[in-house]
Image (tube, rainbow, N blue to C red; front, top):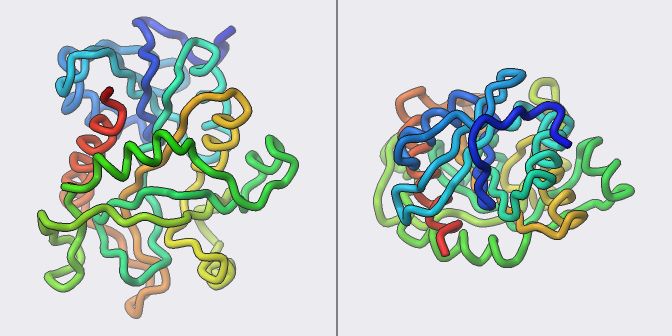
Length: 249
C-alpha cells in the first residue's frame, strides 16, 4: 500500500533519489527521454521513463529533507517494486581536501540520526550495498571533480570521484559543535538521508548507494562557504550522469 506516493506512471526497478524536488525535475529532463510524472502528491515530485543512456526504465523520485521523510518514500518505493535505489544529493564537506562541486561516493554512513537508529537498534555505521558501491566506483572513474587550486567553483575533467564515509544527521543548522567528533570518526562529509537508505536496503534486501556533491565547505578558514547556483547545477549534471551509468546493466 502506498499512502504518500500516488503513482501516475510506471515505476522502474532502478530509482535515483534526490532530496530536492527541483533537482528531481532537472535530472529527469537530462536523463530521461520524455519523462512522465510519477508522483506529485505532497510536493514530492517524481518522474519516470526510458533512460537516454540505455533506453531501460528509470525513475527519479524526490525524498524530501531528512531521514523520516526519506524513510516513508523509500519504504513505499520498495513496496511498489523498486530494487536498486541510489541517493543523489548534496552534502557539507568536512574534509578540507574536498572542493566545492566535487563528487563523493559514500562507502559507509556514520549514523548520528534518529531514523536509522530506530531501524537498526542503534548501529553506529551502516554500509551501502557492495554491488552498487562497486558500480559507482566504476562509473565515477571519468567523473569531473572540483579543483580548489583554480577556484572554489571551478572544475577539471581528469579527477575521479572521492570516496569515503559520510555522517548522517537530523540537523542542518546548529550542528557546528558536532563537526570535530564527525571528523574524528572519519567522516569526509555530512548529509541527512544515507544512513536511513542503507538501513532500509539491508532490512528489505534491496541494493542501495549514495553519490553526493559537495555543496558546502564547513569549517573553512573563511567560515561556511556555499557553492554558487550555476556551479551547483553543473555539478548536478555530472552527478546524474555518473549515477545513471552506475545503474546501467
